[in-house]
Image (cartoon, rainbow, N blue to C red; front, top):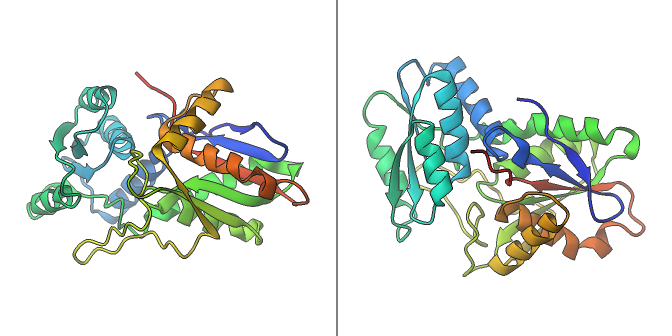
Length: 279
């Protein structure tokens, strides 16, 4: 998988990383390729097996793409709110898709755990897999290389879903940017932004531990669904195709601009985790 563009946008010393340029249209391609490679190496994923996961869309699309390319079956449990295009794309990749009521957020996990009691299934466990943050260490190297002699990073702004991106990316970037401030963006309680974690939500499940530690970021910003849409519209006006997750991160970045630039050393990098529509 090749690198994605880093674009100077909007304000001095602010850059956006266009992860929607990945093959399936989101940052989750990095997770899918890394986790599948690790599972192949360990023997947890073998020929003829089915990759199974729960997802609001992006992770399912990324896993379905890699599964189709490498000859695996795939099966996903998705919410009823999934877009028609995403559903169609999953079916195009040959995935089996189950639409689950959002009333019980743990119901898909129950169904997957029941499936995995039998043979032939591999569950990447995107919310619980301790290897998931490592998927984004390559992204950190890309950002450092792309910034080059333009200076280091003072702030990283990232919307939070599973939490793997901000955890892994901030860990890796802090080795070369020790004063880095990692800023998490989550959905305000009562507001649903597909692909984003609601404020205060814990995803511990049975003996599986949530990989996201909310005490790790330097600051957490709450975003409403309307603000995410406004951020997305602002990106569109700059000719950047973006999803609501990206819109939320960009809105948060713009709201912080007085803290970001004047008198600060280093750059702000905003992760735009979704966006490009691949048909």
